Length: 92
Image (cartoon, rainbow, N blue to C red):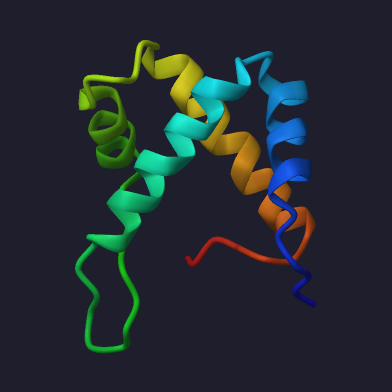
C-alpha cells in the first residue's frame, strides 16, 4: 500500500470532483498544510484534526474567497484521492 503523491494529478482530480478553480484549490491545500503543520501532536506523535476547525481556519484566511461548502468539498475530494492512492486513511 502507499503510493507517491502526484500534485498535478491531485489538483486535476479535485477540480473534476468539485468544479472549483485551480487557484482556489491550491490556496485551500496550502492553508490546510499550514494548519496541519501547526497541529499539536499527542505522545504517539499523532495529531487529532477536527474537520470543522480546519474548515473554519481556512475560511478565516483573508485570501480565501469562498464558502464552507466549497472548502469542504475540496478537502473531501483530496481525502478521497489520498485514500484511493493508499496515502491516507481515517482513524476510528
